[in-house]
Image (cartoon, one colour):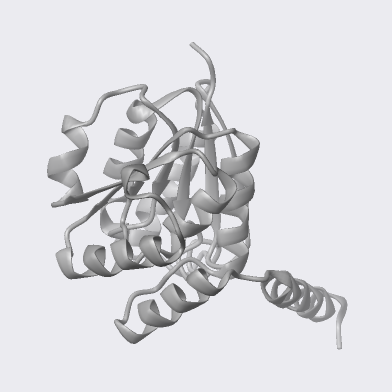
Length: 217
């Protein structure tokens, strides 16, 4: 086995270990299982744990997410930010109803959750700018550029925008992949790298987690 193959194998073992290291709460385990039954791809345990850490480290009080699913990512963020209020947008009303049940089962007070049913493209322009400590984008990948633009507008100075699935099934790192979604993610990464208004990092956990912190004006 050559050195390059050994290095790839070692990384895969490390990624697998980091995912299996995470212990999810019963409420998240149940929501994850329900997600998979409905054909929804939730964030991986490793990404979820990072969401909780970032929410805790930023002492987030106001969180907004694009893409409710059935509540896996929301549960993780609220596990890290025990006093935060979560606003979550999704076009699927049935999924949001299941997410509300998941939040209730986790013992989260109803007044900490605001679920907005609708297309993110219609809802986001109506949300107040510079009002959120943490923004999570985990929705239609074809609209990632638009969602991140809105996310940076909604984040307060010092706030953070997180983008799930930022490596898009391993395709972003593969030069041979050139479909529209991959091109959008690469455009996003290139524009962020050249911006002096933010600092960014990509975690390879799960399907990739892009972290964008808006610097103070």
